[in-house]
Length: 284
Length: 156
Image (cartoon, rainbow over all chains, first blue to last red):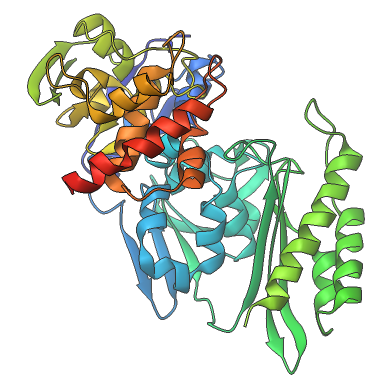
């Protein structure tokens, strides 16, 4: 249906944006690909939309030796067409390829996805698994929030009402790192019923620094310590992969809903992790 | 709020409430009813228009967000009464029945082929997965878009 009426402002500085967000029931608007559908269902009826379009610098992708910083207004399309990221942050590039449909990808933003915190969204999953920092600004200045502590539940984050995401910082990615990403949705571009993200470094034929994450299956993206423990210090062979996948299935706590039962999601996540690990192992 | 943008190459302006979507601005304020509104929450793709070269859902964009942009709608594809090659291909392949989804299919395909005239069938299917059609079963649409590629390749 039509959006409920709201006031609209398009400030040109972060400071003005933060000041406006301090008003009653204000919401930040970037690409609008999550916020506007929510408003169309009247699940959200903000009194004021603060459009970030005129704030300079938020659309930058910056790469340096310490990692990659994606501005809040970087769109999926920008990530997809930035040739540097495929090598500098391959897990990000692979995951982002699964975000929504063509038209949405042309408008949807990194900051919007992080702030919306859909349990099935790819960007929050990448942020959590890669130990990213979510960079925010508020009335008291800037702060960084660890991605692992940022997502507190379905559509819920550690962001205060008058805080704004300015970007996300992904640590540098060693060229030899092994990784895999798999998700399953009934139709390409739809919300995944489960997704598995994994990477590990190789130390003399054994996995070290394993990171395993889940999206879609649970109410928020999170790492799966039990699966990581099943990988660390072991060669990634069939039996290790099986052990990690079974540990992952036991560890997660998915809800049942219209789309899938908890048992199904659990099993699906295990299978996706197996596939992601099989892919990681084959990388050279 | 006043909004001004280029619509199919011509400057237009409208006075709209902030909550007006680009789709409603086009249809109600600018009387360009070629753009269709289906689900009104970003699922069906019928309202797809091209903003600054990128296919977007005009129901998920506020009119005020289009201020200063170049907007192309289905009305901008034909030259007067002469259909574009893409539109002719749709006719040849019976790529529409009721026609409700067609403006979105055409604008999406136009944006795709302008950017990627070499798109293969797999890519075409992937891109059109964001557009729902309840009549055709999609096969003739994919065929039409695939056939229209040559017109875009030459134009490049």
